[in-house]
Length: 74
Image (cartoon, rainbow, N blue to C red; front, side, top):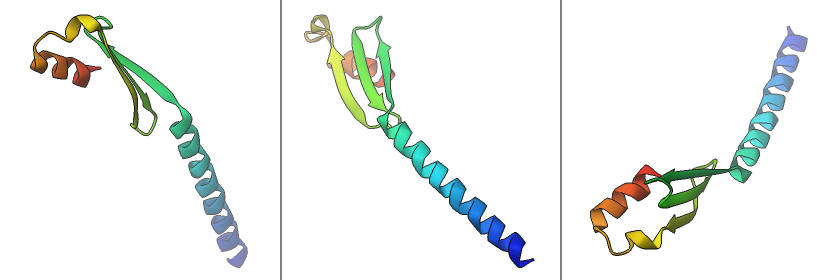
């Protein structure tokens, strides 16, 4: 029984290390999104941290609410 518990603890530790590595890999991943046929583009990490927002100049004079909707959709 003791050997089984030790093995289980070892497996749990290995799983925890793999999970930590997966989280680190996810943080390095960048995902692109866009809306309005590319008029609004965003880049985010796998952890949902916003890295960059690009807004086409043609939208700068438009309706603020529409611009907000396009950013949210990207």
